[in-house]
Length: 285
Ligand SMILES: [Zn+2]
Image (cartoon, rainbow, N blue to C red; front, side, top):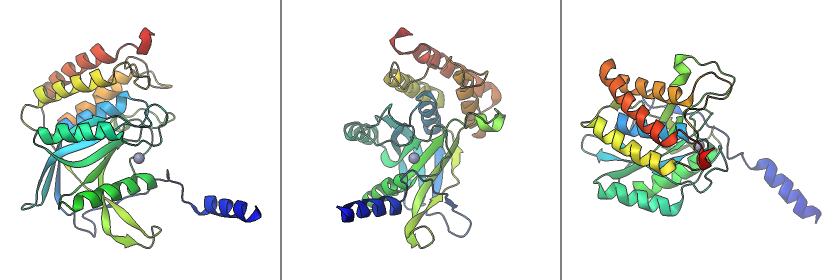
């Protein structure tokens, strides 16, 4: 009996905390990025709205195209999935396998390659946790067999409640990362996560595609227990969630060179969609 309890105690002492966040190295410093990364603002905006409007961690797949000749990966769209732990945790989530298979099929049917996965860190920095790295290692290995890269995008929509609302922390933070091939002795013999410096780009038919996809997303999350009411105010702040979301989106649109007038026109259309679906709380409260 004593032996057993010793083993358990020892085990719990030595097992690293799976939620521990691991800082990323940056590609470009001493290590060359394996490819050029372009991120479409349509994909980023979808992920940003999904992450903002659900209070727990959200998860999904990334669709895009990889050109091995030019070593360029274009992330073109995102496909939201259901989480197995939906509504129970803001620290971890796992993709529901049925929803993952559906998302995979939708992307491939639309002519995309599945090039990565995304998830949110609702109120903490977008560095991967040890568990995220385990998941990334499995996916990366699986897709490497098909000679295709597979990356992870982590987005953090909200700063912690005690932070003041400056323009800087109204804009979501995100990281696109992959694991190094070599093992690092300084990181507990694990592979080091490397963050890309992606170029945010705008595709044709942005207005049509994005509003269409946001309608789909909002219909999907509308009325769920963890979906928030966007006219409510941020915890402890005098600002509705809606204002926070639109400020972040506006910043992404203008980063791609969209004019202020055009950006505002798109923001107006998105505001209308969000208000139509996510205004009242579930059960009409
Ligand atoms: Zn995570």
